[in-house]
Length: 347
Image (cartoon, rainbow, N blue to C red; front, side, top):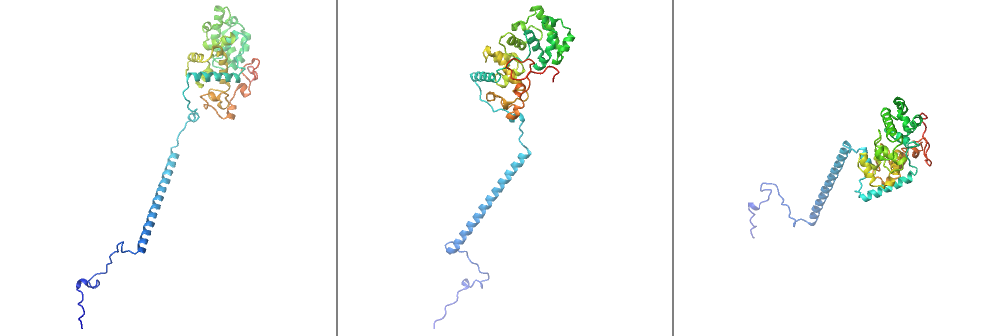
């Protein structure tokens, strides 16, 4: 009989009997079954999806946090916008000289259609009465002057009569116009000058008029334009305000304003242009709150928006005949569409 083969040596002994637990070597990729490889790939894909979803969720949360922080910051520190800035008109492109002159003349034409009845708003019957009324109109309304002059001219109808007036009696008659002492001195002085230097007549030249006490270029131009038919620009507060709002000039000094506006319009238009601008300034384009929403020349005005733009609210700001109220003259000229002003003390 053949002898059985000799048992293997210690190196080939059973692992258990070799003194340690069994260790299994991980199988290589080539050794894994197709099922195992499929399971591993699925696990990796699932883990990747979870990681991506978590990252997106984190990013979304970060965006929400940032948005909330911005909102909170905005509430704590709101942007401050002043009332004037919010109503400021949009910036206009630079205007050429030719374009400015065309726009200015178009405004004048349109105002002529709005106020075909524009006129001097002082009651007078002759050059002397207009001169005195214009001197009295400083720092007060034409309405108050018109309510005061009937008694004044009844007492002193001529320069000679006024030159001989008792100062205190004259002051009392013109007291309602304000600054009555200074105005009384001017009236006495110009009356004496008219009596002594001009034969009791009001001169028809600007050079002579401005030599009279209390008479400047504005007063002289009013008298020349309305009593003598000599064209002149009346640069009062209304006229100056409007020509600056219209962008015709940036000057503040009345004489410089007069010089610049005189270059824009033909001389024949000067007197009526003055009446139209003053009418518009008193009725629509007020100093403190212009009625922009009711202004007939709003599309041509670079200052549109400085005042009330709501049409209904703006309409309530209109004055005199534009607002359905009495005018300033007790004896308005023919064709005036408003009511006469009430006499002094009548309300």
